[in-house]
Amino acid sequence: DKVPRKGGPGITQSDLLVVNKTDLASLIGADLGVMSADAGKMRGAGPTLFACIKKGDGVEEIANHIQVARARAMGLRGSG
Image 1: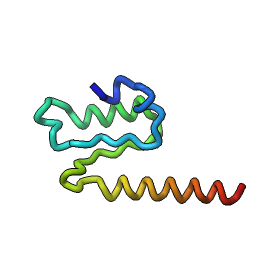
Image 2: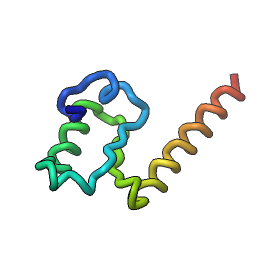
Image 3: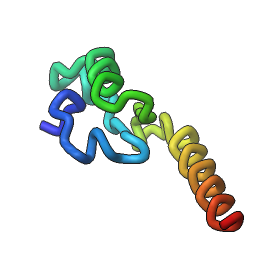
Image 4: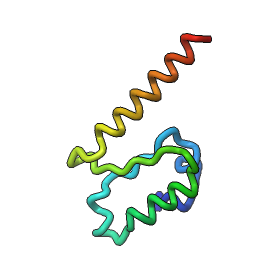
């Protein structure tokens, strides 16, 4: 039931929305294209990444996002 169109705070306010287990989408009748569109509507410019962590898909992108966000936060903290 944790789908982007529901728009709870975890969806709308998180720094990064990760949709994991994309390999199971077809098995449960979930459409990743619809999920992506819904996430875009609910999150605006907030980033959304799709992943299948078990297979390693998307892991690098998630790690990169976290590293960039950390570097920005540390830079902001250091300049204050």
